[in-house]
Every structure is written in C-alpha cells, then in structure tokens.
Image (tube, rainbow, N blue to C red; front, side, top):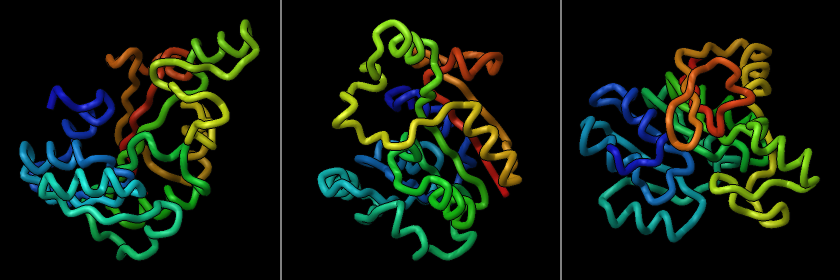
Length: 196
C-alpha cells in the first residue's frame, strides 16, 4: 500500500479485513483497489468526475457517478462498516450534512482533510498577504475546489459540539506522520476515524 497517498495509506492500514466500505469521492479508485486486494474488503465508490469513474470501473471496481452533497441520502442507514471521505469534506457545499450522512451510512467514518492552520499557510497569509499555493494546495484562490477552509481545531470543536466520538486521529506533515501535539499548527493534513 506504499503507492497510496499518505492519508489513504493510514486509512487502508486501519480498515478491518473483509469490511464493507463506501468511498465517497473515491477518485480513480486507488484506495478501493488496495482495500480489495490487500484486505479482501468489499468496496463501493461514489465519484463526481466521470473520467475518474471510468478509471475506477476499468479497475473492476463498483463505482457510481454522484455528488456527496445530494446523493448520500439514497444509501440505507448502517449499510457499510466504513464510510470514507478523503480530501473531499472541504469541497462540499454542506460539509455538516455530508458528515451526518457519512456517519449514518457507515458504522464508522474516516475523514481526511488539509489543515488550513498549518504554519506555512499562516506564514503565506502573514508575510505575503495572499492565499497560499503549495504542493498540497496547488490551486490559485479562484480555481480551488476547496470552498470551506477548516483547521484541525475547527474540526475537533465541530465533533465535540455534535457529540461525535473520535476513535483515532493521525496527522501528517510532508507526507509523514507527526505527533498530535500542536497539530493545528504543525500538521498539513489530518485523518480522523469517527463514530456516533
């Protein structure tokens, strides 16, 4: 699973063998294929981009074209062991509703997102006065899919306010795990495992 993006590798490491999985915003199905091939999981996916849907289907994966903001309501409650939303929450129109649906559909949910409070983002705004363009946030402000800029601390506060339990949390800096200490400042990405 070393070919997976670092946040996806963490998720893949923590999905139980043989689990049923819904990958929301699954891209080309890389995580789904890894879970199928190494964990004998039963993955399904939903993806908004037709080119990515075609690539995932070409891998022999069960993926439908759909939108996380509107199509998750069609899935039955507790229909998957895990629902996964990787690097997608910040691109949805209603992330609070999407997360509610994720936790309704899956008995557990993995959520990963870029941390907009990382020190490099802060420095770019402070010293340059402009929205950052980095390896992990490569788009300009006007063409970024990120419409909700959240931080690790924002997400933790959101979970507390909604009574959502965190079963695990991992933090990444430059693609490597970093400690939870000062994660809001030090981590570029966060991965959370959640349950109701």
